[in-house]
Image (cartoon, rainbow, N blue to C red):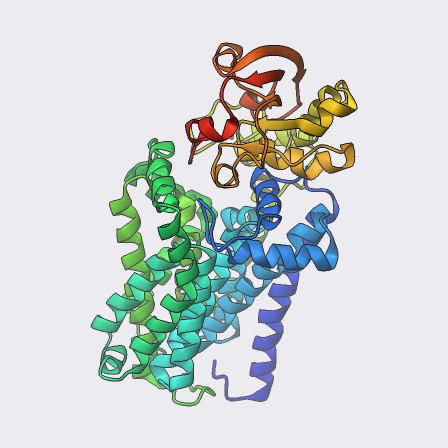
Length: 531
């Protein structure tokens, strides 16, 4: 259907922004319910926002800076922390519809593209917790939308905007490099973009992106490139992942019933042709331009898939940011192929199936059910708890298990801390084994009067022992024999247990260690653990 009429344009806007509002409402409702609790990584991001820097071991700084500003304005409750990422989720849904419109799609195409994002379990899960990943998906969608407008109207301001989006995206998450690689290949293969290589603007856009990304690059150079070390170690952590598990996981992660939709969309982007009867209200848009736009999306997506397959140990969710491209293609295919009376009826039936089954699988990605109800529900579906990291699991998948146990860690450490005298408390350090434990002590321990924690995991290691000498250290986790090699006196003073947490966080011992045999500053290098 043509978008030349005002009524059709209004319907399309209503669909796009209505679907975006629905996505926002879903996340608000889940977060208001408590969402089980803060996720391990969220506690770490809060800690990072208290230690602002141009870089961190495992991610660039932009999302941390955004969180810091947000917390200053709205506080640090679970709802406040997660609201920005809910906005990013809504923005991504809207951009899926706008990308489809840019490609020549009408209201039905935009609706299906938005719906595919909404019912994707992995997308729901990623955008329900604060991290750089939800903003990464938004950055990919925004940059893609601008690239498509460049194909039909390569004005300089759009090149500058694309450079800014790519640069900010890189400053949020380095996986935008995959998008950049896809764009580079598309500029070689797609004629309208290839012609732009004769101008200065693509190179200026690249320079802008690099300049925005440079603080993280400089930080890495100064600190011995810890991000590269982290990435090498991450490959080992995900060694159970193979190209086979990656491809199978992608089919399942975005709702299995959407697979025909987006795979068909991928084929349509590669081989399809815009409808000959379609008339655009977008200036400069014609059939040949839209074909170039479609081929560009196919090239970008295919390039990213090849990169992830060559990586060999890629997780399925690594492709989530690129799925908006093929969701847009799927919307076009539905609108073009399922035309006519019966085609529209079939499309409507498919939409109903996606909505109903999307609601059916949503508890696998959003903590909408009480824990016991979720456990019974997942067992009824025959879905065993899963993890990509090879950890032993109990009754919850790792994604949910990592929302439990953190309050207990801070409470139990505080009980040991309170057993010390005032003089001992003044010189006591608290050391924990991973950034989840450290973040829990820092976030929940404030009300107990606990000092900021120290640890050797990722960026906590770069923050050092915070001036502590090792005269008195409460250690959460670890082995007594190992601690006795470092301290003259080691006393097991407590244990921290938790329900529903990941098993290795249950029954964690708490030690009081006195008189380090060497100052902490001298042995700190041995505590480093990047993963």
